[in-house]
Amino acid sequence: MLFTTIQLCKNNKPCTDGYKRMLERFPDHTKDEIIPILRIAEDNNFGLEDGLFALKCTMEDSRSTCIDFCIFCLEIAINSLHTNNKNYNRIIKLERNIRDYAYGDITTFPECDMPLSIVDSWDIDERILNVVYHTYSCIESASNKDAAGHAADVSHITIDHCINDKNDKDIRKSQVHKHLIHLLEFNK
Image 1 (cartoon, one colour):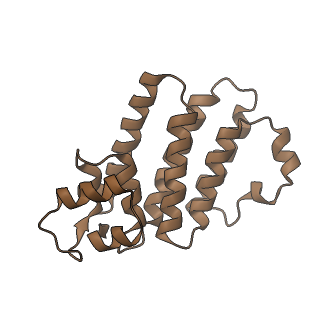
Image 2: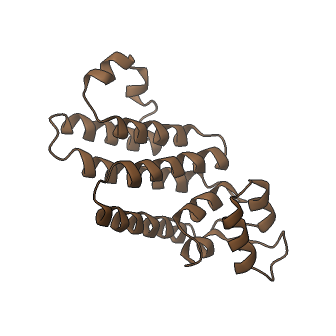
């Protein structure tokens, strides 16, 4: 299970509203008393962004949770943008390669060694490439703070830029939030 404290969150410079919600939600906690990240993610007073921010502030290594979260968002982005794209098979291979690299099934991410001109010639939507870039950067991150930052970027790109319909955005945001909770439950 992943834990944080009010002090760890404060040290990572939360937004004013998020920090205020944390103090209101946990009024009896001392600054160093542990709080399960799952409680923050599940609590209706907090949102997806607060749960992702809390992953920056964990006492334990949260990078694997961030990586799993990024890969889930990548699948949503691909399904939202490229189901009828002529390069769909290439996109699926790109997604499989990043997943295999993340989980150690391959030791290098082949697309990183390719000249940018080749990747550009694939005619893949820039939003997908941005999600792949941040997923790769999350995998390579040396700290919880960096990994969670990339996970938040992936979430933002996926929900706000890959999905055009307002109702679908709300549904996907809820789905992404539920998946984050699921990943945190899995870490028990």
